[in-house]
Image 1 (cartoon, rainbow, N blue to C red):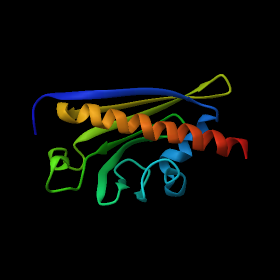
Image 2 (cartoon, one colour):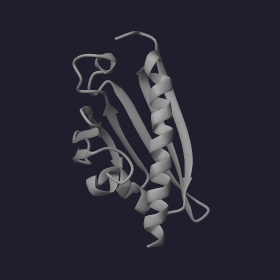
Image 3 (cartoon, rainbow, N blue to C red):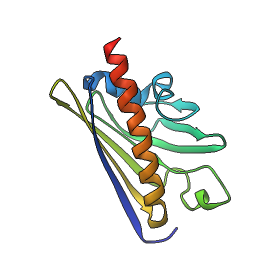
Length: 144
């Protein structure tokens, strides 16, 4: 893997309490509303984190921290053995999500670190897209 790495940081406000937002990070049926097609989640330290983000593109890692309803962290990389995704093997990078109560909702901070420099722009764009989906989905669910 190249020695040059980068970090993505995103911050969004979600009009739902941290307890509700946290569930979207650890429950497969809720995660499916904002990212991925199939999910295998074991939200405990050392538990599996597997998401088929798009057809044939599977992100795999392990949970490194699970602290409801404030924080979740997991390693991230791709199962692919060929193509550009093979440059970020399963479990190589780290995704950290912090949830902070704010103004009747939740301030979500995402930090994705240890990414090869060539992955930063693409992963940054995708995280922005998926977090927007989370923002919409969690807020709508909170209204129901």
